[in-house]
Picture (cartoon, rainbow, N blue to C red):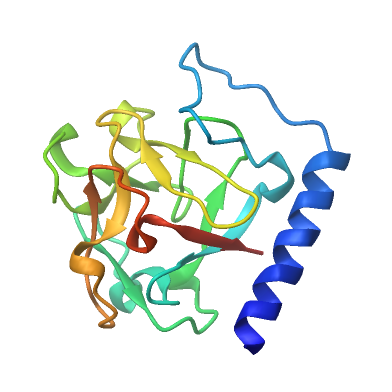
Length: 176
């Protein structure tokens, strides 16, 4: 119950911020997916929390190496769970100044892992982050959603891309 109240309060704050602040326009010609909005009010370093498991998107042990898979882990406020979004449609989700969340080899296959890769602006590194409450995170290259496979609630479960289906394993909360 406490978590539900916290989420409702955060959603109300985000909604107020979004209606009060101008929304940045997408810098690319690609339109936003139906039903998603840019969250310019939430630009900056954030925590990304899976709605199904209540765990943070993380890099295990903070191993910031190219090719390392993103996982879910108990939220602990550590740097390995800190991501940067710029609030524009179709933007990179940066882990640090050099590495971005990507789908390896520009795969469009459901189940392909979300990994860290040197930021290069490629479509496999561009994501649409909706908001203001829970929303999917959609990959520009594949059109698929960031998910935790099999609706797992196990710490360490790998983040993958999957055909968007509206399930809670594909919904994410964004916290500063």
